[in-house]
Image 1 (cartoon, rainbow, N blue to C red):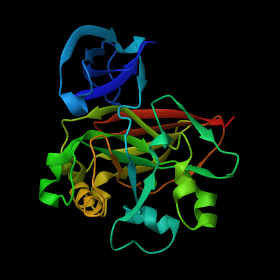
Image 2 (spheres, rainbow, N blue to C red):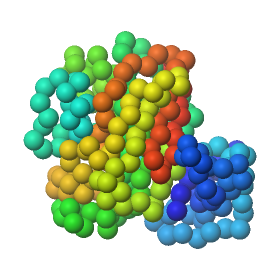
Image 3 (tube, protein in one colour):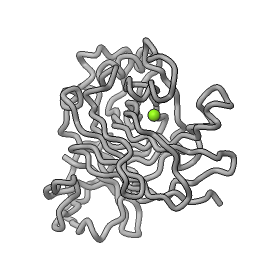
Length: 270
Ligand code: MG
């Protein structure tokens, strides 16, 4: 099932996106959003009869984390190499504030304090249950679904600050979307899903989720051994090689097999 949050100009609502995806992972022209009652993370699925053509709605970030977005650094060896330094033995954890989340089509705001902001295309795991100390073999039980993230990073501030809070924490530095896919499994990503990032139409990242050093169950076990995870929390699973700078006016598209395409533009922060 593909769960969206959307608006038609009124209050945001959840819905289920129906129809097939084309070879590029885009919904077909007849795609319809069937509205849902309430929040699928908390009340389960109740379909309304109200339907909208996808073309008539604006998609929003499919989840608004009430508490946190947990990032994982250097989880693909080739990306660790391009950043310099060794691959960490354990998953390298950091936090992005929930206020960094924006949706498909929203602007990434280029902050005044940075001269180098980078895209990082990543699989995002959405947590569905309150949990702590989750064994890797039970990770599937706590996963609500998967979406795409752009772990936007001010690379210069990451270096000068010596830690990640400012570099990864600006408003708009965590685009999420376009929907949450609930029918995939961690094994699908271990087997390998193609992950690609295009900057103004040019292919910049072209990796496979099979190359994650720590797979999704291992990440959930690791993170939940440190902090309680809540429904709607998001774990970013790291980016493959090919990261690079974005400029004001650029358009960034991240496509992951089975998860669609997340598109955002860069604007100067007012
Ligand atoms: Mg990242």
